[in-house]
Image (tube, rainbow, N blue to C red; front, side, top):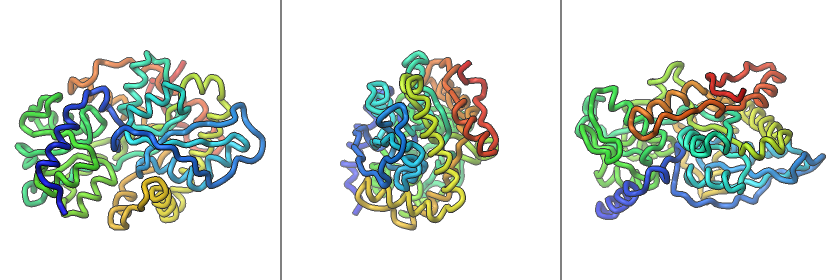
Length: 369
């Protein structure tokens, strides 16, 4: 049953009122509370590395499939031997960055916007991006009765997850490319950009409060299951149809103290991604089992299948696209020109990729010296 319009509007207003820094979240943010995930499929056995434990943070979302599957199947734990994985799930990027800064987690799966914000706020001392994890999985979906062409988006109300988040910036940039004007802070202009939590957006769509949404998976497929249609897949706007949606970051302090543990986690990530890409159907089932364990219910097949298909799992951090995304944030007035030199440390990843006979990942000139 659709939510009352008044309730939906209150939800949208509450989201819109939050400060930018609190909202610069990763692609699929659903709030800001962390949740302990103490279950381990595989016990820590074998030789312990330089740390007793490694604390890994991630989101219970398909764009974090590497973490979902790697922890569910024990692939990451296997590489760590006697060093135990302690995992925590988050619902928004800022809370994960806060946990990393506070030392509550050591390694995190997270989107480009909070990675950039966390790096610049710490003046390059807080974190490093050490690998990619996922590309794509973002779509503009619309009410086909109200919007039939891209030009029809002008004058309509389109939801994005959060002010200043990755999808919000992408939509603002697309609007600018169309030659339309929108105030980036208020969202008012030739298009009304409605900042709406992904949990609220389906109700807002059903009630008619928004005409569409520029959102990540599985929210996009959820809206399609309720009658929306895909008007644009964001990957079609990028060279080679690839852009970073999820990175792996590490606390600089932890990287300096425990490089062997970081390398083992990366070995587990590379092994997980290899398995996901080799057996997509089994990996999809595993990811959905992890979602059921974490959220209490799995995704319905009609949402899971198209959402999974639109996400590419990759070790490549697609660094050039992160540089471009930062430029879009600056152009939109949501970010001052950042100095991103040193944000990447791909040495450990490239060591692993080389040993596997795989191409090394590039850092777009933004790597440590």
